[in-house]
Length: 236
Image 1 (cartoon, rainbow, N blue to C red):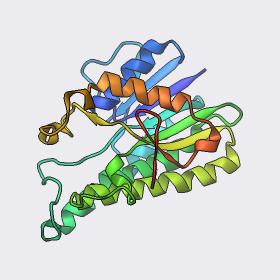
Image 2 (cartoon, rainbow, N blue to C red):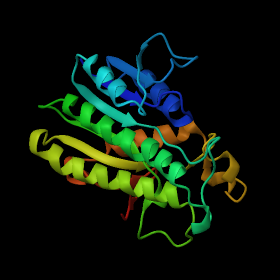
Image 3 (cartoon, one colour):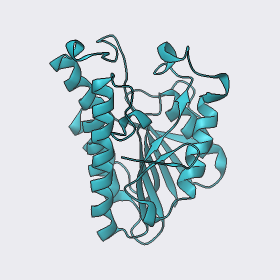
């Protein structure tokens, strides 16, 4: 039984990934994982409660999966919320805010890898990916600012790289990567879309389609790396 899992199914990209997988005809089972059940969930998709801010919830969700996983995508992340927005300068840094960003952008996905990577098929091709961001690239940082978001995504990229090395020892056919979805028209990017050209502002459906196509084109030799929506590799 071929199973695909999307964690963060209530987000714009996560919901689009669930929809794309459910209509692809490639998977016998598609699981949408989120803190609450999506309002528009297709009857053909299973719902799995999970809260990446709660380690016990992540472990409990993994225990409920009884078939090997062929695809896992962690489509969660935070740039701004009611606790604040991205920092523009060092003077804006706040300890609680930084801890919150790392909890959502790094620690939650890391624990998802801990519990769901062992559920990947052992003797068949599989893939596990985390949605990251180009701004998490240290070598590509030329503008500065956005300290917490940049750092938490850079840390996520390192988690993915390290997990890929370990995973290759037990599941040599598995792919473990970070993916950059582009600038997508969701709540995350909404306050920062003013300077984005229309052709560079993607719908969630387009971004999901491209991310799945990129993931399908990767092999275990690509594990541990970061790829953008167009298939281009992003330097760490």
